[in-house]
Length: 200
Ligand SMILES: [Zn+2]
Image 1 (cartoon, helix red, strand yellow):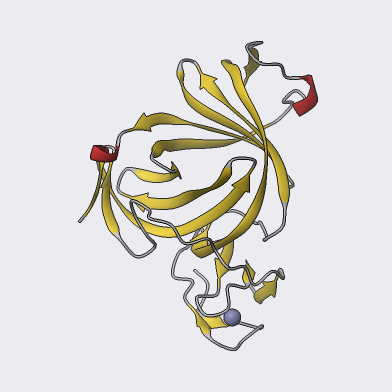
Image 2 (tube, rainbow, N blue to C red):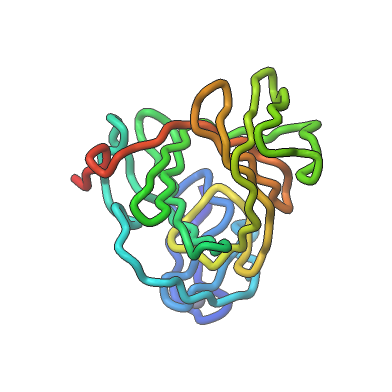
């Protein structure tokens, strides 16, 4: 657990009350801060998020896909068709990411680093590949960039960072394969309907 400290960019106190926090976003100036044992490392980019209606927000307690979570963080990404949000959830069912892309929702309750994944450029639509013992079926290729965030997340990332990702299925479940700067990550979960999400 890391003690709360002040934002090196603006001096405001930043709440880091979560053991898995790798990046914290200053609530006042939006600065992305890497959480290190000795303090914060400013990552630059005081990002202003696009405001839009979201099903949950940081600080909410919500029932999502049948389990109760605390919403600890949000990352907003931009891609070709606009912006979408990932909400970092933590609860008795474990940790998960809720993705909201306009009115479409996916809950990823499994995220793992993939070693020996094929190069992004070697994947093709509909050409399934074996990853981590399962079959990943690529459906949609995108380039994304990090707009910014709120709260704390278990990833190290910074506004402006770009990455490639592939949406598809993994052993029949909804999945996303993300080619981030820090590695390749497979997220697996399920599509949700708005009725599956309830702020408590
Ligand atoms: Zn700040």
